[in-house]
Length: 396
Image (cartoon, rainbow, N blue to C red; front, top):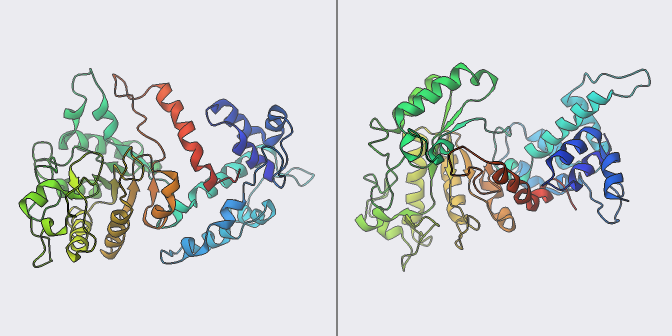
């Protein structure tokens, strides 16, 4: 491995996936000829970049501070990486059986496998993942949202989401992909009743009784019995119905949702189903703790997708404090709940979310909201939307 191999990946325009694949397969030489005069990773000429430096400058306190985990030693090793030579012992420990020829050099295929593993190391330990993650591997499984976006096909669309359909998908996952590590069943939007009009006794989201007549805990128990994990969906803020009803906050005598709301009342997210919280009131923190208790202890969710999080998500608000409070409250429950932020988080605000999220989306939906799941133009746009996040793996 050498810096220029990674540099090739840095420099290839992301809207050219074929060129991206060539750079991964052939290293830097072909890309450098095509781009013209690109210098090595230590160069400062036009187009030069340092692929390893961003890993080195990630603060160790973020990687191994308050959120330290048993795998933190590996993260601390990565935090010390400042040149390609620093990666050699890490790569040897990751894959010690590299085939080598008589000259002592690894075969081309082995080099490519090494490069793939390096990229996995870099992406698995980006600041967003390292701040909170217990397991830095990607979440793999199935999500309900895509089928809910299909139009013009009987049986699909929003009405598709029911307990029986999710159970059927879970059973199919268990038979096929689960042995290969795909163990998540994430139930996206529409599992809950409209929070602007319906909440539970403590002012929190409640299940849609038509879609899930036996509730979400029953679904969680079914999935867990199959060795699967349940993901659920939530929007930031105080549900409007809870504020209007002055719902009592769980385990907080004298606190109501109305007392926890900011005044004057203002929307908390782009969907307009919730009000912002008044963080100077102790009732706000109590309410967030009750939400964490609901998803962790009552519903037994393993992943929580917070959608319409801003800055970003085509909204002018700021949910950073809500994300931080809920993340801490979930940790305090003692159960591991993966926190995923959505959608298209503003890269300029990434530092506010780094310690409090396991993952976040860098783009809007890939679905085309048509008669199929997705079309290529929607997929192609994602490459350009990923560009602002390159600085978390490459310094250009």
